[in-house]
Image (cartoon, rainbow, N blue to C red; front, side, top):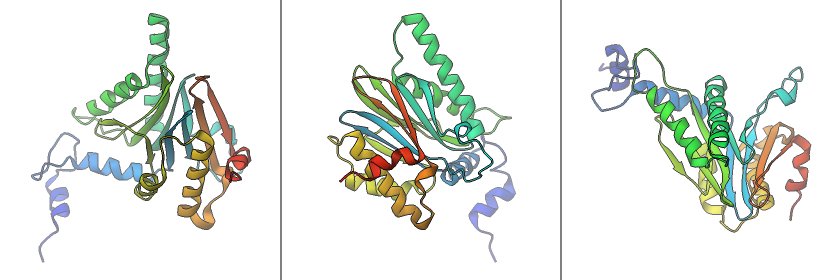
Length: 243
């Protein structure tokens, strides 16, 4: 019986380093890291007519954990937010680096940094770890939302260091199913409140009986105020009750 191709590649050592291409042109360690991202808890981000938001599933059920210590949406600057999927400890390094870059920009130029400059910094760092030996790729994908000159923006980076701008996107567990729904339902003229309701409905449909609003965290930035606002758990009920 012939050994499957994937097993052959592993036996030959093509998956032992992030810098070795398989005969088919794959970086197997990078592909393994992408699978790690899809095991992470999900987040949905949307650009709306009045701002941008990220709704994240914290997936924390342990009553012994202080809920405020388990944030899933991070503040990069007062006008930029980020969520992650995958190995959160990996993401922390990228988040803290992004926060430093944002503050350095304010000090140097006396102005808020553009969201795309943040995602580009993150993507460049992630790309480096797919090219140098002796280190593994970051096992995380980042979604960044922010305001630039009054206009909401949303970006997502992947394991390889690529990034794209989105009207709406999802990362983490069940991301492909959520993206299918977003392609059908998202509208550019949708307001934040309506978008959050739609995102909650998507999570409820996918998670079924496991859906609990207490485990979700919302962060959004209004285009006019350009200030981060955060809501968690039962505070989201007002969005779920919208007609």
